[in-house]
Length: 270
Length: 258
Figure 1 (cartoon, each protein chain N blue to C red):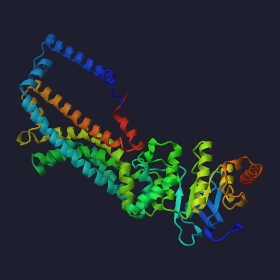
Figure 2 (figure 1 turned 90 degrees about the vertical axis):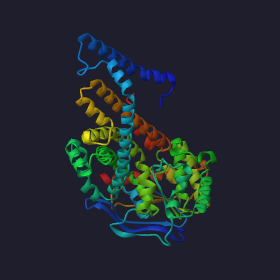
Figure 3 (figure 1 turned 90 degrees about the horizontal axis):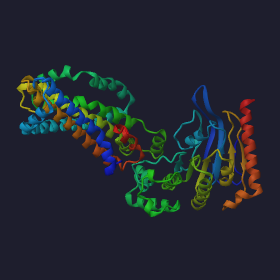
Figure 4 (figure 1 turned 60 degrees about the vertical axis):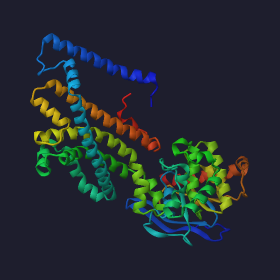
């Protein structure tokens, strides 16, 4: 890991510099072309909206954060359990995997109304949408980790007459940990998207005022500066959860041997 | 062809008329007889793909013969050392060595004691036992793999080209350590290698396998007294025997092309 101050600086100044340039051009364009604020607010308008509406934004972010975390946790538990079942039999894997892929490819927009019809407009529906969106990466990566095991290691366990449970607990599950970490990272980003989409769908009738609801209501009232503020908060929330999961994963893998090291570099383009 | 050593006391393991085919067009072994006596050190050499590793896996019970049978009188404890160390990367050295006992359900006090004994046998320093495999050199990893095999106090030790990936110096050093362990424990050993000099240095007998299934096995007896030391490799008689094994290997290879 490159974490010396000099390194951090050389890593961070290009994106920060770009951000400053974009903000300056944006501010100047709004001023120069005199765009109406409901169509394109200036960065200064957005900043004002954040300042005015800070409490509501924070509350909504927390709300959405809790929902995303709940959905993510549910997909971790469900995903690992499903992967364990998949790992126990090729037949089960072959029978069920197409449906797991179905879960991944069906547009959430198509099933969200159904979920709301069944489970109402509260917290459970939003968590369920989050779960559906974030489940597949966990299933796919954990199954790969449980199944792709070196034949020699399986022979070693067979030589000492290990039963199915010993192979699962002492070989397959620990072997799958680095894979699970990779899947969890993808899944954490998707969980925030899932929570916002879910909130967006449950809409006005809801008792659940998260960022998705904020996006919906600000756009309907043409409070575009506030809409921008909500979008920025959504992005920051996604980054926060992703960073937290990555950090926990790195800490976990540091004691996990060489199997984990490849998985570490997925997000590191440098 | 039944190779029984002149000094045989008791058979430790044997193949009797063993055939093995993965499918009808892919016959690996045909009518193979092989005897290894109690406490004997036998090495299998042969061209790549002749089924040396398959013989070890049959002996270990990891493969079943298509015909014939495997004899293991007295149900001996068997350990297998692989070509790769095959250590679990998330376990420490100590935990890796203890794995077989864990799987066999040996209690923790006894495990502790036997792991320590094994560590001593391979000359592993205490600061290293809490390390994970990635922190060890290739030679150290192979030593841990050997210790893991020895921890069950096996009657029979099967070794599948364990030192093939190591440099010559390290290989010779580990050969000497292996002989010391064989001597101390009286373990029966069946060793597979490509390296003729290694085969002669270690063994009571070198069995040369044919290139194709159904071909002729031949053997070279190695009568150098034990304990053997590194200086044995410099003797003329040693070079002569190594040359003999090499010649038979070449002849085995020719059978394939004629």
